Amino acid sequence: EAEVAQSPRYKITEKSQAVAFWCDPISGHATLYWYRQILGQGPELLVQFQDESVVDDSQLPKDRFSAERLKGVDSTLKIQPAELGDSAMYLCASSLWQEIDTDTQYFGPGTRLTVL
Amino acid sequence: LAKTTQPISMDSYEGQEVNITCSHNNIATNDYITWYQQFPSQGPRFIIQGYKTKVTNEVASLFIPADRKSSTLSLPRVSLSDTAVYYCLVGDYSSASKIIFGSGTRLSIRP
Image (tube, rainbow over all chains, first blue to last red; front, side):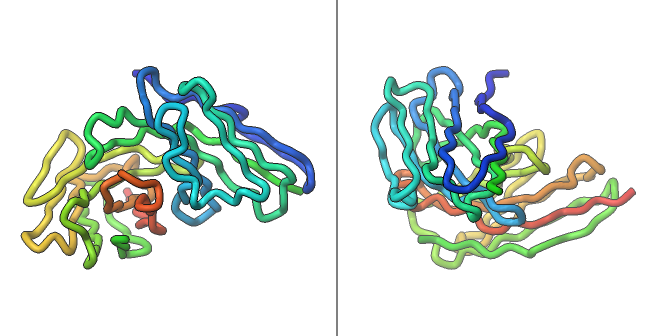
């Protein structure tokens, strides 16, 4: 069964450093999502891509976060500079987008970020 | 935005049927109801989705009353491996701002 790949699985960094996460969606999936999940809470959507275009990044803290999906396939989420409050699990998901109303998301294993 | 309300936690025993109810009083006409399951240190996994009445798959059933202001996820004959957090989502996914995971329901299954 095809899966969403993410790397690294774990990242430890010091505050004020830059970090980057990579996501490779399921082949053929046009839509890609990045979520942030703080321990004990549900995932919070940061950004949604349709192919290489950003559909909605209204919930992305743009002063320090950036996301790109240059060729409409894999994607990178960057944080610069990292802050203590950024410690969380960063999840990537993808979907086919065949029927908008019933779009099922497939999640990757996530990257757990710890900021010291 | 259709906000959802779920119980914070539930306990049950192996072999029992578990029903988790989600309240979504402000659901819109175009909104679908989707349930996800999440194990520790893993991403959420799709369980079931529906618009109205009843939907059943090999894993669960979803019951949606006529007014669609709530929904119930039914897990038949649970096992220890069903211990997880279950999230109810309501939305049409046409905009990222409409995709909202709540805090979910932490289901614990005991032997």
